[in-house]
Image 1 (cartoon, rainbow, N blue to C red):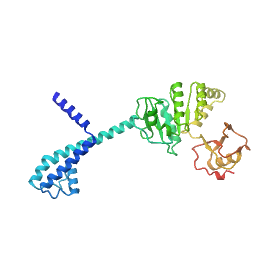
Image 2 (tube, rainbow, N blue to C red; image 1 turned 90 degrees about the vertical axis):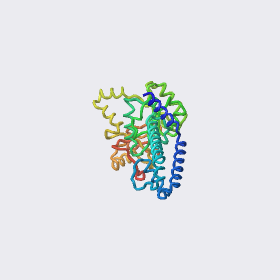
Image 3 (cartoon, one colour; image 1 turned 135 degrees about the vertical axis):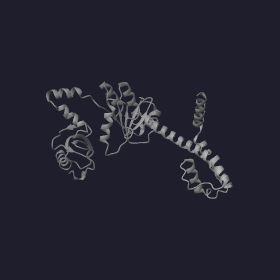
Image 4 (tube, rainbow, N blue to C red; image 1 turned 180 degrees about the horizontal axis):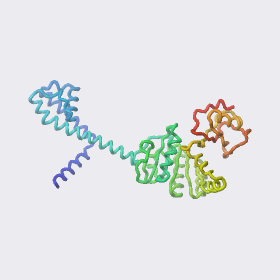
Length: 342
């Protein structure tokens, strides 16, 4: 048993030290020597290039169709003593090395150790078994028509929870420049920061705003004052407020209203609120409201001129180009013909 263990360790060590270049060199030497030996053995049927490669592949893979074989006495000895042993060994090493590299690449990608090549993506910082899977599912539903990439970035030792749907990057810290570059921080369109500590959220938010000042950063602070402070330093940060107390109070007076609020933000439960930038001519709220309802079966509920939302504005309220419209619909409306809004 010790001898077998030593032999196994020796073979493993030699195989691991066998680089791709050395393996390629050994393969080329094997092909050159094999062809030379067959040539000197007068195996004229096996030495043409295409026939030789075919014969070597069939022999090395142990398929053995039998349609080609050495005919001379010397050719048979060359095949038995060199071509078959050498071909089988090299074939096994090449296949083994390719399989090993493929598994390593797959494992590195699954564990988030490789750089992702994406841009204009949604970058999620942080992982929570309770919140993040649901967040990702909601985002996938939201962006299914735009095919936008999602990159999950975590400091925990986990595997990609959605390997066929999103990209995953493991980092040592959300402020590490090299690690965050692997996640494409500077190329992200939207950054969602969902960490357990307000201090970590603040540090990550400042770093993201510094590396990508044009990205839309969304986060949530348990201490609302920290959210206000971050907003003062980063203009593109949107701090989500907690509305749990408001929903409880509203439901106490209007039973069932919490379900309405939940459905308005959950895109998997039918009618959901969306936002779009108005690109038509200046007109009244009444005109746009009617057009949305008639053409798209959507309900316009608010307008933002850049100074905050105006809920349920009067019918004669003026809507101008680049105003943000908030509407309720089954799905996000795409391909709006703004020329009809007059």
